[in-house]
Amino acid sequence: MSQASFETPVAQPQHHSFQPPFDGAAADQQRSQGYNAQDTSSNAAPSRNRALSVRTKTASAPPKTRSRGFSLLSLRQSVQPELSRKLFRLIKSENGLVHAYEAAGRERIAIATQLSEWGEQTSDEAVNDISDKIGVILSEMGQLEEGYAAALDSSRNRLKMIRDTEKSVQPSRDGKNKIFDELQKLKMKEPQSVKLVMLEQELVRAEAENLVAEAQLTNITRQKFKEAYETEFAAIIERAEKQIILAKHGRRLLELLDDSAVSPGDVRVPYKNGAQARQVLNDAEDNLKEWQPEYKAPSDTGSDTSKGKAVSASG
Amino acid sequence: MSQASFETPVAQPQHHSFQPPFDGAAADQQRSQGYNAQDTSSNAAPSRNRALSVRTKTASAPPKTRSRGFSLLSLRQSVQPELSRKLFRLIKSENGLVHAYEAAGRERIAIATQLSEWGEQTSDEAVNDISDKIGVILSEMGQLEEGYAAALDSSRNRLKMIRDTEKSVQPSRDGKNKIFDELQKLKMKEPQSVKLVMLEQELVRAEAENLVAEAQLTNITRQKFKEAYETEFAAIIERAEKQIILAKHGRRLLELLDDSAVSPGDVRVPYKNGAQARQVLNDAEDNLKEWQPEYKAPSDTGSDTSKGKAVSASG
Image (tube, rainbow over all chains, first blue to last red; front, side, top):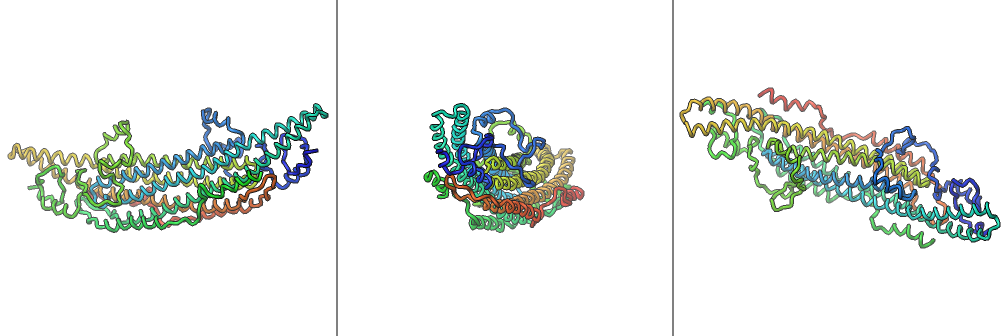
């Protein structure tokens, strides 16, 4: 048999209860090693202890995300190939997240100006100066949120690369399964048909093509998943460390504002902290300039992308 | 003159070019000390060097916030007293900011579940486990955003207290100015009028009432402004420090995922990092529990609020 000479193990889809026509022992051995990346069944999830899981568990548990009902969005999702549907939704949600942080950044910068203008209008020299400088701090905070939104978008682009690969692997799986089914049917109906040899050859070619596709999928999935969240975590740390710098200097500014209560008719001690307040802003600026990432996130056009491409060349 | 015995200095509104009928010397001395909290003119902003200011400076400079045009919002603003109008807008913008962070938190938590469910569907044991645990980290991140939104709202409530005081001080200023204007007009028209004495007495009462109101305003403004931004900066630092803890453990999880490329037909090394990954989550949980604020933000119902109230008792 031509199938027997094709030694590479290929796991069979779980909805077929019979043995595949090629080396079943190899496939069994493969399963026992926990290798089931080529499994097309979505019901194949092993039930493990998930005390610390975010996965929605049973139908009785309240869903964590609200249903959007019947909408254009859900129609569009239904035409996505099965394989890439979950990631398609996730990428859509990530878009919402990016927009939320963009909105936060924009609002924050607007508030910074409004705070400064309010302070000016109070005609209280101290509130005027401190509010203007707190405004500068808040405006920087807003810009950090905008930068974070941009980094999230870059992380999202890596997930898109997984989704696109998933999309392209689906026809390969479907094609292989179709030929396999056809072959089985013909074997039952006409075990002596001359078409059997041709179908078997076709299956071997489809298996080989699918094997490459599945290798590309696992490589892209792991690399891009890792890169996506390395980018995400690096962005979180950058935003956090810089916002801590700003907030600490912001507190120094607040300390320059005397908030002791005055009695009616009493005169406030004249504000003399203008130079100190200016120094706080200079310090904050210097500290932000000095900031260095402890760990570097993968760049958008890194050479590591070629790792995935090498597979298609070798296939 | 009865006004002369009322020694407390009161600055005159700048649109009156003449001397007020009470102790002008005291008022001048007061201005030279830079005390102009009672100045009602909004054109009184001194022009200082503002290299590090966020304030919109000239008409030719592009505005930092987009105009919303003629809307219900702008109509509603026009009925706010002049004094509290700027803070009214700022508080509205803060509401938008709170909503943006609430949305970010919600999206993040939804994405966490989606990521875990995507990983499960890949049928790749390693991606399955790591994505589920990254999902737990992301879900915590989302909850921190929601907590941050709540803290922002508490900061916003302090600004509302300033706005409400500003609102209540406006009629006091207006009333005082109205009597003052009436008195001046009558002095010009009927310098011997018997009504003059009555009006002067009325003015003294209005001045006294306004003096208390202005003291309340400066006290509430400084205390609540300081508290609002202390709360804000404390919340930024808490969110940042906790997200750094989560992101660093998130990176440890990513390191447990082998992303070396496999060739078509090669079998991945079986995933054996489940226990280690679980340990990372336990560590993250412990670190979050151990977290302590370096600095305490003012509580919402702090006794410091009584500082402002003490003024009204003494008035």
